[in-house]
Amino acid sequence: TQLLEQSPQFLSIQEGENLTVYCNSSSVFSSLQWYRQEPGEGPVLLVTVVTGGEVKKLKRLTFQFGDARKDSSLHITAAQPGDTGLYLCAGEGTTSGTYKYIFGTGTRLKVLA
Amino acid sequence: DTEVTQTPKHLVMGMTNKKSLKCEQHMGHRAMYWYKQKAKKPPELMFVYSYEKLSINESVPSRFSPECPNSSLLNLHLHALQPEDSALYLCASSQERPPLRPGGYTFGSGTRLTVV
Image 1 (cartoon, helix red, strand yellow):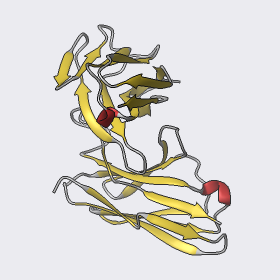
Image 2 (cartoon, helix red, strand yellow; image 1 turned 180 degrees about the vertical axis):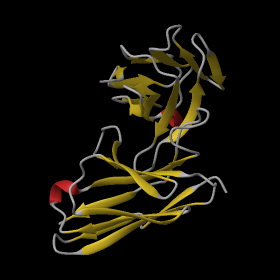
Image 3 (cartoon, rainbow over the protein chains, first blue to last red; image 1 turned 90 degrees about the vertical axis):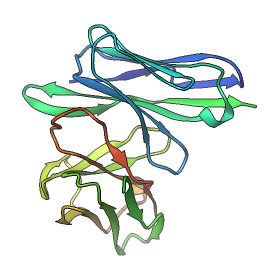
């Protein structure tokens, strides 16, 4: 069974601080996505990473896909209250020849002004 | 048009009611999904439609009945729900399933369902 564990589960920080969220699995994924979800809304796709070791930047957000394509990280620099939300990683791959799309357990971030 | 539109945004229904959730996309996506999300949890897959045919039913109770009238529309018919079915119901779409290339899903804003 493919599982994606995110850590930490909850994070409350002050505006201006840096943080890193991790997404880990024992399985290999062909690609991985990161989403942000605000209360009462659907998840919004932030990025897709495909190649092992790949790094993508989106303003203050830096995403990295592990060399073995089993894990990923999201680093936020100088967090702002607008970054508050639920961050979800999602991996796609094949298990026993069947395509699967798996969501991570989620990281709830709160940035205090 | 790069959106998935869900209606209604909020729904309160009794356990004996019949209601329907609607989802629409005009991105030409051929795979559409229903997810259920409880508070502070990740989305849980319910149904997958691929090229308007039901391809995955994740052992969802029969009180939830999906329907895909055409490639742009996805409905979820609700009947005799229980209070524990209260949740955010999300519709999503993707180009294909499995995808020809990775790209993630486009989600709607969801329907907040409360069963009383």
